[in-house]
Length: 411
Image 1 (cartoon, rainbow, N blue to C red):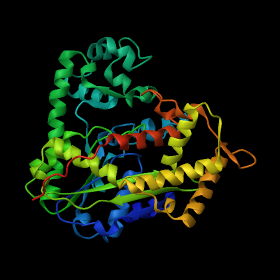
Image 2 (image 1 turned 60 degrees about the vertical axis):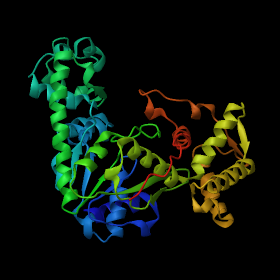
Image 3 (image 1 turned 45 degrees about the vertical axis):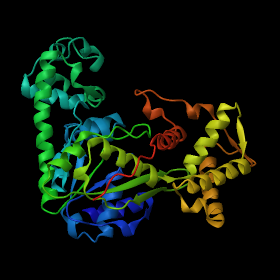
Image 4 (image 1 turned 180 degrees about the horizontal axis):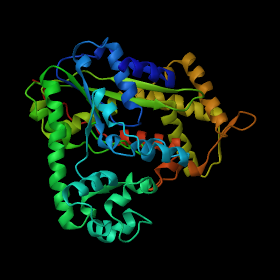
């Protein structure tokens, strides 16, 4: 199966692995990567499995996967939303059994879950009640268009898929229901976590995203407590290995994905939860690859702020060249092609081809259009409208926020 991931990843992307020799494949290892795209698991697992030959701890691995993948209607409500007729036909399909068969098991956030998951728990703990009784005045907001006296079971259907696959928090339910939902969910979280402990204690490996949820806008999410609890509750001395994934979209053809492997770290049991989060963020900052898309986004944003409508191709190239060297001098990881004059020209032509394809290059190929609308922040309701440039800007600004922490003690 993971060999298929490796093949799929290389058909969809140009995968460049940095630090391949650091892959330790040690018993009891947790592989960590920040969750940027739904394809992260295919790229990371396929690459690690192939590099390790499917042997050792990797050959006995398990993967933490968002619980929404195991919900009824996931394919139609999350993956294939258009065309509507196809989404309707796919709504009854469930893929949870397949995911478990390949070693991917559910894990959930403590409070933010898709409404579908909350309502399934409502059926379990309080029964099939009218949604107005369980959501109170929030019913009309959470489920637009639902009949006033509709039962929970009436809502778990395709016409309400948009509402069902929207993130909601337990406190949005009426207090009596919210408490029972929270009690049930705490029990489920413990069950989920307990499933992964024997994998580590028997010498296997686990793949997971420490923030537990996909970033919708490129910003790094909050590090959740699940990783810390997993480390503390296992018997073995856990190894941690961080892998930073960077999607370099700004080129014609397939997107390049950098998978940068950091060194394996031991003795994480000695860390506090804050120290663990600090290590993750500092490692992410150091391993994330600075790409031409990141550097172009910064320059184009600054030009838009100055009221400019175009920027000379030569000026943008010089800004990117200087920016790449500045980041390299500061110790950041930079796309090696940006630091080699010959390779830079090849990468630059691919970048111009991307700009031309997206209507940003003038007919004389001397100026790139600066579009102010590419740098409009979006609300949580319209992340789908976020431009690739703003996404890159959020990522690189986020790296600046991940300040370097003092080196943690190692034993």
